[in-house]
Length: 182
Image 1 (cartoon, rainbow, N blue to C red):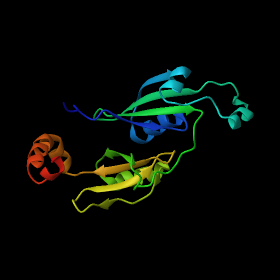
Image 2: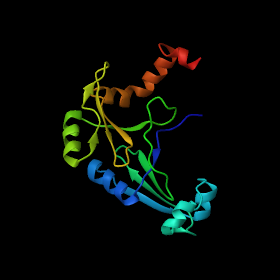
Image 3: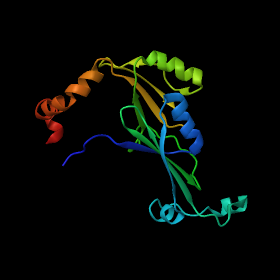
Image 4: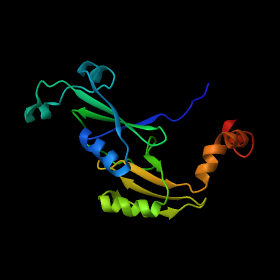
């Protein structure tokens, strides 16, 4: 058994409509589906309960937990699944050395132009484009909730990985990366 392809990544957002607009306006990625999750499923599947006593004193007493889910399609077929929960916890910056997901990455051309474009759009860029020891260019930005987005230009390696990636994986599993499969 093996996976056919990468499908999607899920991100919990503070504001559903703002997330839809951000990914459309900045990256040209359209919303392709929306679902409102029934409160009982929000409780049982996601483990999110009704608002806390603090929220109740703010006028949310008796409200059932809610979750709106959306699917944003990227060129190439991958999807960002966005969740807006009510009640919600505040965002928390994820340190690089914490086990778990750290960022999403978009494959682009010309990271320097992307950097300038994102700056004009008001997107927080936390590093300038730099070249890796293997030759590709990249930089990091944040969405409006602070989620890290890596902008990566693989150069010619994009085509090598796209067309020869399966063959390279087969060769490397049997050669220089064999130790990782033992």
